[in-house]
Image 1 (cartoon, rainbow, N blue to C red):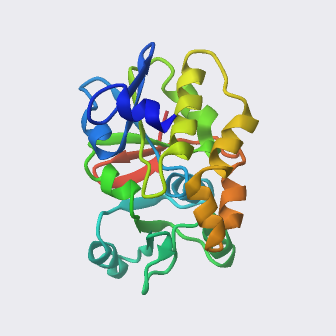
Image 2 (tube, rainbow, N blue to C red; image 1 turned 180 degrees about the horizontal axis):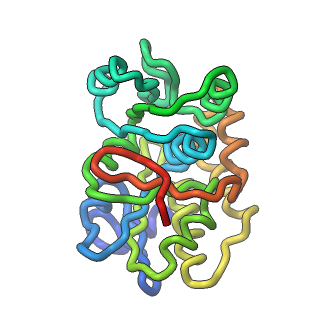
Length: 232
C-alpha cells in the first residue's frame, strides 16, 4: 500500500475515491485546497495521544515543532509532553504515550498540555486547520466530515507509513459507505514496522491500546496552533 501511495500521484502521492483523497506527509498536507477538509493521521502515536488526552479531560493542547518552544510554555502552567525518535524528551513531564498519559491523569487532572513530536506536530504547524484522526476515533471523524471534500494525510515516519495508510484507507472507505473490517485495521497497525519498533523499545502497551478501534467518540480540531475538541 505504501508503494501505491508513493507512486500514484506525483511527489506527495495521491489515492482518490469520490470526494476523498489520501496523500502523504508534509507535502501532502500542503496540497490541501481551499474548501477542502484536512484530516491528519499519525496513529502510532501522536494522533492517538491527542485523542486520548481530550477524551480524558484535557481541554487544550498546543502543538509546536521544537523542544525549546514546548518548554517555553511551562511557565504558563502547561504540562510539557513529547518525544524524539519515540523516546521521551529529557526534562519533559510526559512522553508521547496514551497509556502513560492516562496513568498521569489518574494521579492529577491536566487541563493544558503542549506537545512536540518527531512527525505529527511538524506537519500540523504548517496547517491552517485540520481534524486529527486515529484508529481510536475513526467513526467519529467519518461522521463529522461525511459531506466534505477531504484530503486525508497519512503522516508516516522513519519506520514507514503502513499503519497511517491503513487508517486513512479505512476512513476513506467509511466516507463511501463501506467498511474496512476492524481486524484488518488492527492488523495493519500491529504488523507495521513502526509497531514492531515500538514493541522492541518497550511500548507494546501503547500499540495494544491503539488497536481498540472506535474507543472514543470525539474529533480533535487543530486551529492556529491549538487543538481542542471539534464542536461539530
